Image 1: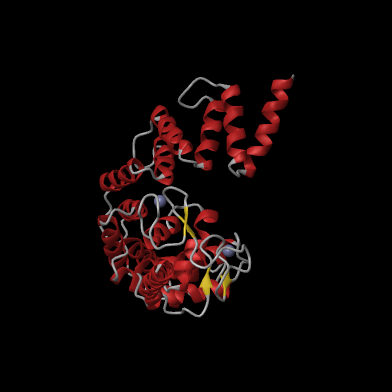
Image 2: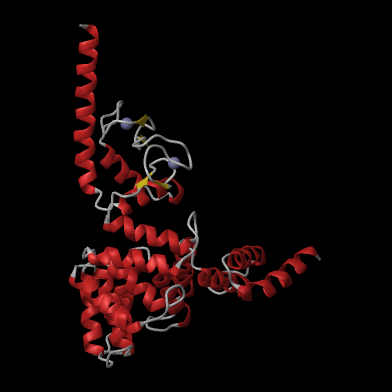
Length: 339
Ligand SMILES: [Zn+2]
Ligand SMILES: [Zn+2]
C-alpha cells in the first residue's frame, strides 16, 4: 500500500515537472543545447559539464537561494522573472548566465546584451562576427534598440567594419520603432551629408524629434543649429537656452561649453566667475576639458585670485582623466612647490 502511494506520488511529481518543463521549453525555440544558469556554459543535458550543476538549477536573484523547481522555494518568484532580473542587473559578471540563457531563447534584449559581451571581451573572447550575428538576430525580432546599437557600431567602425550606408538604414528603422536617439544620428547624417545629401532643415527636424523625446545630445545639436543658423535663422537666445537645458539634464559637454562661452564672451556676455561655476559642474560630471580649464583659471587667476595649490590639484585631476597636455604644467607647478 505504502509502496503504491509512493509510486503514485512519484508519477504525479514526474508529470508535474514534465508539464512545467514543457511550458518553459516552448519558449526555448533552439532547445538543442541548454545554458547553465549558474555559470552560463552550454551543455547537452543532464548536468553542466563546466560547473556540475544539475539541469534546471537556478539561483533566485532576490534571495540568493538555489532552486530546481520553476518557482523560488523562499520568495515564490518564477525562474523566468528571476532570470530576467539577473540579466538586467547591470553587473556584467552576475548577469552573464542569465543573458546567455535568454539569448539562447532568442530574447532580443539578451541578444543585444550578448553582443556587448563579444564587444568588450569580458568573459567571452572579442568577436566582431559573433556580435554582428547577435545584433542581426535581435533586429530580426524588430527590436528598436538593436537597430540603434547595430547602427552605432557600423557608424563608429572601430569594432565592426565601418558601413555608413547600412548604419543609416539601421538608424531609420530604429527611429521608426520609436528609439529617440536614432533620430539624433539621422540629424547628424543630414547635417554632415554622410551618405545622404546635406539637408540642414531635415537635420534640424530630426534633432527636434529626438529632443522632444528627451535626448540631451539632441538639445546640444539644436543649440548648435541655432548658434550657427543651420537649417533655421540664427538665434543666440534659443541656442543658449538649449545649451542650458542640456546642462541642467546633466550633460557634461553642455556645462563645459557654457563655461567656455562665459569665459570667452562667446554667445553670452563675458563672466569669468559664472564660467568657473559651469566648469566646476562639468568637472564633477567628468569633463577632462573643464578640469583643464579650471586649472588654467586657478593658475592665471581668471574669475578668482590665483591659487597655485588649487591649480596643481586640477592639473592632476585633468591628467588622471586623460589630458596629456596637463602633464607639463603639472610637472612645472609641482617643481615650484618643491622649491
Ligand atoms: Zn554550469
Ligand atoms: Zn527567492
